[in-house]
Image (cartoon, rainbow over all chains, first blue to last red; front, side, top):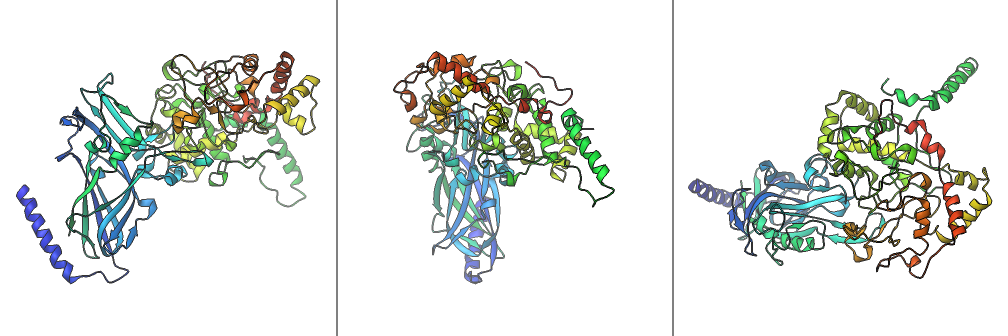
Length: 269
Length: 356
């Protein structure tokens, strides 16, 4: 299997090299396809729910039963700084480890270009959080995709969810639950409150490019490391904080999840 | 026939009269318009512009009818026993009279007193802590609260989608087949925004159609002086959050607005409730601790528990004499709106059983 993948990679690289030379992006109306793939990880390893033990930076053993998050407001940026912003209405993705199809999101009608960076938001912006319910279909509908990612009592989306169990947990059932949301308040002239949305910009490694042309498809392969919700500027101890939801501490986990993503590689087909 | 309860005696008579009148005049005049059976939201004189975006969800006869059926249907709860109306009873201005905190499913107890549902179109936030900012999103909270209806919105939508009666009601209300969360929530909002209370004895007194006793007049004057900043007419709330000094409980203290904003200055603050129909909606305060208006008056007579966020109005002494309390209570009783609590339009459908 590994050999096949390697072979495929080499072929892809060769193919992309040859195509690079033949088709520079010159037609301003040329459009192509980009696929975003979100691959959930635990440190250096593939994330396996429920059964596989992991260890956090605080040294606590844990298993993960749920890992889900929203990413939104995508922008693709070329080396020369040209920015393509996804249409806002179709710019919200919910990735959940227990739903494999949620890992892939195909973007159509992306202007041709050689993109080197991707900018996006972890979470859901305040405007969408307070928008009329009719403007929140699909993954944003509390009766559909958002059924497990929405606080009804404090209306707003849960941006990232990490649940599991750990012998270190001080919870009665040895569980831990990290539900991180809060978009900053401010509705109806109310006060500004904690804002756990985070914007990040990722660069395709090794001077790679996502090459978007009429006749090809670029697939950007992201890694999302679930353990980074716990490890980072604050190493979260499950013993000390087995449950974090609407509390000031949620900000620490939000700061951690800014480091959760990276682009591992790009396939140019 | 599905709407039979609509045409209760309150509606039938005027409608019949309209029919007769139009029938009589028909012979001599232009073709007459359909009898006015349509429901529409009307802003009462002297009220501000509604906050709710009525233009995005105009109230229609069939939308309101659907909202009412939903409001009175236990299908919205996990085991079919709890409807919105279980804790929001018309006779008590749509609150749960006699319960400090409401009984939900399996008789589980909540932690807060269920507030009246009235004049929702002017409310800038919902619940004692203001955690919900849009009336359309409000019903999700009790549906999903484990001590209230304990279901999930997606499950409730599924139950509605499988129900042929609802399939018809939704199609009628929205002009095309289909049941989804937006439609369900918009229909409930249409019912709730129509629950307008603006015809109490106070309103008629202000309009010059009613007289007050000397005691009621004294109470009104006192109210305007001492209470109206927060309980601002005509809504009798300024929609703000304040700590009015109700003593924290030794166990399980409710931090109120703080739970939502996580701002220290919001600790122990709760939404200023409207005082319309206050005499009908006992008990009082966020946890329903006071069973009578007399107790409420005694609270506002120097009964404030000092915490850092206590409202400035109460920090340097605030009290009432016994005669003042009596006059204030006499005035508060003029805020009861008999037409509102007996309006057939809002009344339970036939066969609806009100639990305790």
